[in-house]
Length: 486
Image 1: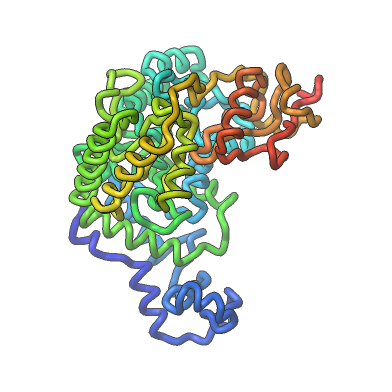
Image 2: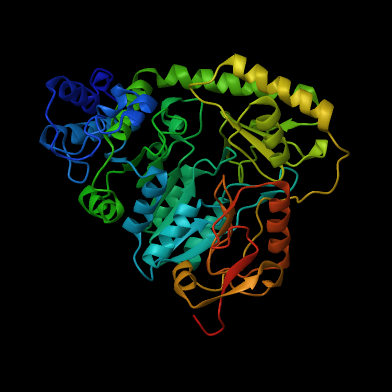
């Protein structure tokens, strides 16, 4: 990385120059720098709406960058140690899908952990690739899926030598990391691409104390959620490429689904956030790691809770752990994670990243302070004192191994019929069902619905998890495949 060059922010600088020109706008957007929508100006401010502009020669075009956006992408590649980067304005969802669509076409195989984000499975619906799922090990006490074991990946590659790629989570939502270097090496030995979903690993690139990043491991492509731990605006992301990828082809894939009206608010936030991380990321994330560890220590002192960390590392399914992730097991105080999540929000005005059946997750980042941590610790202590119940049997896993009957694309487009959810056991699902966040499908298209899965969905609904995916708003029925439709 070139520190002197990283001081530049070409998109931001160009927008500031443009603002001073007072150009008369006979182009879109129709609010015309806010003049046509005073309520929007009052809400967002003139500074913001004044640079909500469309692509034009002085400001380049994201679909075919040749000037300032191209330079911003080169700077991002330099900062993250990539051969090329793309600014993404459709979230990391669009970056994950671009990876899968670049690697696979209809009929191709791709190896991936079943606990992937819905964006990866939806990409299979779009391109028609066949998934080879690796079931992650599960920590029964914590109720969370872990990473991919190297021997499981190696077996999947040997059993499917025609697979085009392997996809790895780095890390999972809970901070669990697989042995990324070894998996990338295995992929290349088997002539497969190594794709990495780093939605929750932006900070890995800016601290030697954190787990290995995708580009450091030699991966071919990585999706990086700058808006999560990187500090950019929501929906802005990066797609990173290794030296063996063809950026021209990947750009064509991106443009299949990318908007032709890219937001300069999002792009400038990526530009400024990249500069901030390149110049100050190391010290910032070292501070974040210290805050998260302090929070873990304080929460574990309360009793009843378990804020887990590096002690989970076992060299296999937990090869490494992201210490900036503050995940807390709650079911030992008789409360599901989602119940503690709701109490924190409703009674203490504390918004957590998510609550699931067994855990809550606080996303500690460059914008947090020790005062915020103290407030969370105090609230959790209160909740234990005021709301704890005798421990009872709760569901012990956030992940139930699926039985895959057909591909996501075949199932999604097959003829379907509605069946009440309590009568779905034995049917093949034609849609996804998930708690969001984290957005990992409990059921994906093409999987057999079992009684265990139905019980899990019903339990999650009763506890207040936000359920998404099916056509049914209240998840009272599911669309299942008609017999003989695939």
